[in-house]
Length: 76
Image (cartoon, rainbow, N blue to C red):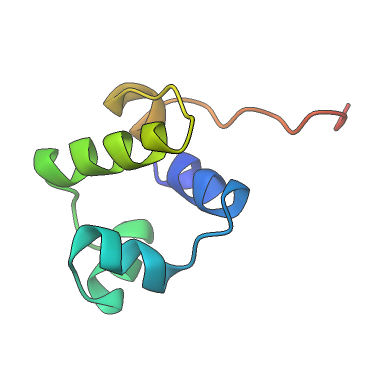
């Protein structure tokens, strides 16, 4: 479920520490959410969508949290 979030993090060079600052949460909390050990709240999901969209993305909650990870260009 969190593969798209991780893909966006890599695409933009973001660390767990940076994501923790964006979310105003601890790095442990963010790590647990990314690893599926803690659920995301709707407010957190919306925050992630808004954050990545502010960086040029075109995401919805569905595409970011439930969609398929797009293949890298040239990875055929």
